[in-house]
Amino acid sequence: MKPRYWLLLAASLMGTTTLRAQEDDFDFSTLVPAEEVKAFCSNRILGGIPQKLVSIGYDVQGSYDMNVGTNGNLGDVSFSETDYQVNRTSEFRIDIQYPVISKNNITVALQVNYLRTFYDIENATANNELPFANTLDDNGLNSTSISTVVFKPLNMTNFLILQGGATLNGDYTLADMQPLAYTRWFGAAIFGWKPTERKMWGLGISRTYLGGALNYLPVFYYQYASTDGKWGLDVVLPSRLNVVYNFNKKTILSLGHNFQGNTYRLNALADNLEGGVDPELRRSELRFRAILDRAITRTVWFSVQAGLRYNWEFNVDDGDFFRSLFSDDPYLFENSLGNPVFAQFSISWVSP
Image (tube, rainbow, N blue to C red):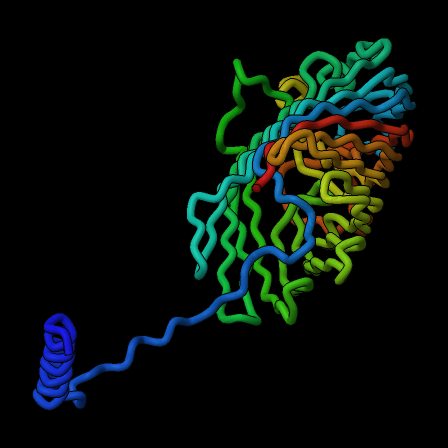
């Protein structure tokens, strides 16, 4: 045998002897099992709609009639009922939902929303006794809100969704803000189940101004995507319900409704009313709509939606208090609006 083969055989025997010696000297009883890694469900489903992180949109409604001042409850203050023609209502909005913590065991997102509503009302100064239409035409409405949304998975099947936030709404402008004493608070809590990677649902309760006034409403949450990825449901009742159809990965059609609203402090109107009246507009509407989302790039999407805006409530109350969606309690005064068509255009940065 050649010398190099003797050297190779000797090295192998020495390695085997050393390994056995190490095994004999090592106490395997001191080994500690690795800690079990707990698995959690995620906050998204396979085949779900893209998550919009930042959206900028413009909304316009067609003309409609507005009747102001019916069934007034202002005591000794008298005013006349007046009809107006609203030529156009337009809105500019910014919506931000950005994750500040994103881990497998918890996700925390910061939400910031800004909505500016403009009114173009013919002969808005017709009723000087009750300058409601005048403040809408001159000042419009502003809504600024900030909130935190927490998704806390408990295991692979169950999860919690918690939301809390504040909103400041009124006929103020950014250059002339209203007092923070008129800040309104909202929140929600949902307990949910995720039986598959394509379905998750939950039940909860909310403190909300969705119907215009302060209310406490149940919440039903449901997200679903079919196995072929074509059909889906996006549901957060009573806020929204969308039936979703994916033409492909870049084009999505949604059909459904959106229920939205808030309470707005009317500062200009308060200056014209005596007796410590604190007027707040209970504004809410139900929108029946079709939405087409189209990808421009991997993370930038364009959206267009159109439909009918149905007025749910546009009445004025005295202060902030609980009022049921179906309450018959009297208002300071009531208004009625026509139901125009609307269109909305927006561009969004989505989660990749």
